[in-house]
Image (cartoon, rainbow, N blue to C red):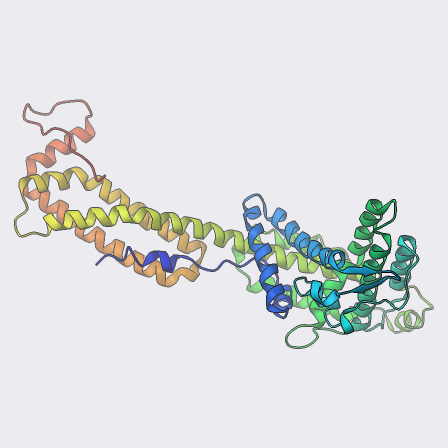
Length: 411
């Protein structure tokens, strides 16, 4: 019995979009409409993997950045720097992560900055005010406040003569805090509760997680992603300060620089994401190879069905035996190639265990049947077999005046 009509439904495995676990968890908690939109944008970008893994990873960041910038850009602005109708625009944006619970559908910062210069100062002052013992949630809240301010500056700048320049500048300012804000949200809003509460703890927890992750990930993906080299290239891990330094930084007597912590956390996530994208590239290749096998298999199914009608009969004709001898090589090669290519696709993606097991079993059955047919044909018309073998070895020559003419192959 042929399984040709069952493979199409079994062949399509869901491809991941190459996100690290933390980001996947964060997206899973988004409202359905936003989640679907984000995943669709990432799926649309998957062909970039065929260009390079790094191209797709860059696009992942672009999707998040553009989506949040759209949230800020699409809201309605009123005189005085108040953003109204925010809730409606945020229903289809990842901005919901930061702004979604803002009351009354309005975003109003604690003060309205005078302009882009003030926004830049506010960002610098906020980061400088963070201390070693500042709670991660407080940092996240401060960054969200800055995103609110950025949206208000946009509102107040739309009508200005230099609006295009201001918009680009604001995008640059937002870029300073967007990735760290997303990182803090990912760490704080984990399904099992906050992963960590302070920056020094977050570094330790994430380093331990990355070490475990790389040990359990597919070794092929870790190697192809060059992940271990990426680990070696990490900047020095921010050291946990001793008691004296901690105390001095906590009270502001010693400067605390948040930048190395944020850089380190973001690079750890990038390593994890690179391995995940590399896995997707492998699975994507496996899917393409599997689809090619399934596309070629119906030709073999047709041959086996047609030949079986004659060769499985009680008394095949002489012409049936001749045809079998002529087509044996094509049939044998087709079975071997489909088996080899199917095995390769399975090796690339072992989730296909059931599909590959069924296909392999059917191809083994085909091979046994075809071998029994050719042996029967060779025994029935030995002169045809000898003539065919001679012409294969000596193309263009005649063995005897009674040689059979060339006969059609499998196709």
